[in-house]
Figure (cartoon, rainbow, N blue to C red):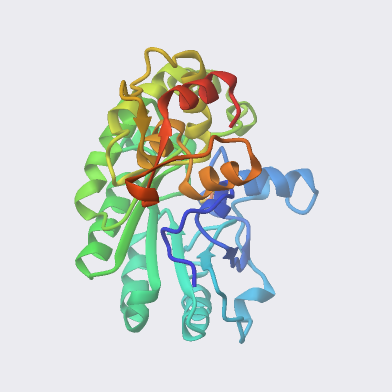
Length: 322
Ligand code: SF4
C-alpha cells in the first residue's frame, strides 16, 4: 500500500495520490486560477461565471467504494463546504471503512474541520489532512479565492487538526505571491505540520484571471529569480517539498548557473546530494540510470555504497538531460 509521502513520478494531483474522489460540480471558493473551472468552461458543461454554484453528483450517494492500493485524494475538483459536508463525511467514511488511506485536501473551514475531526476519529491513522494556504494576507486571498475562508480560519483549522493528533500537511500551491510570501506562510504553518509543506507556483497565470494587471503582478512576483530565492531559502529544509512548477524553474536555472550553483567540490557525490541538486526523486534518478540517461554509480566499500562522479553530474546538468 503506497505511503502518503511516497515518491511519485506524476505531476499535479498525481504527485500526491494514486486516485481521487469527487462528489460535486462547481465550487463556492471560485478561485480565479481554478483549473477545474477552466476545463468545465472549455468543455461546455459549466460556464465559468456559474462555477460557484454547487451541485452534488451521484458519487455523493455511492454506497461502495473499492479498496485501493494507493492513496485516495478527496476532493480534487471542488472543496469541502457546508453545502456538501454531510455527503463528504459519508463518502469519506465509506472509503475509510474499505481500509483506504485518504488525503483530505481543502481550503479548510472551521465548521467542516471540526465535524471531520469528530466523525473520522476512528480512522485517524488512515488520514492525512493537507490544507491549502497560499498567503497570510486577507486582501490577496479575497482577490484570488473570493469564496474561500480567510487565512486566519485556515490556520486555526491546521492547529485544530494538529492538536487532535491527525497527520497534518500544508500546501501553498498556488503560492499567492513571491518568495517573501512563501517564507511567511511556511513559518506560520510549520508549528502545526507533522508531515510536509508543499510549495508551488501559480500555473497558467495569464488565463487565471481576466484582470491583466493582477496577472502581470503575479507573473512578476513569481519570476524565476524570485522562485530561486525561495528555493535557496528552503533547499535543505526537510519539511519543505517542491511541486513540479518550482522544480522546473530550478532545473532551468541550474543549467545556466551550474558553475555558481552550490555544487560540491568533492570528486564524488552521494545520491541525496544529486537528487537535491537536480530536484528529482530517487526513483526518477534510478529509472534514468536504467534508461541510460543518467550515469552509473561508482561502487565503494566493496560494492556496498554507491556514489557518482561530480564531473558527470555537472556535465549532465549542462547538457540538460533531465
Ligand atoms: S478550491 Fe479548488 S476546486 Fe474550488 S475553486 Fe478553488 S481551485 Fe477550484
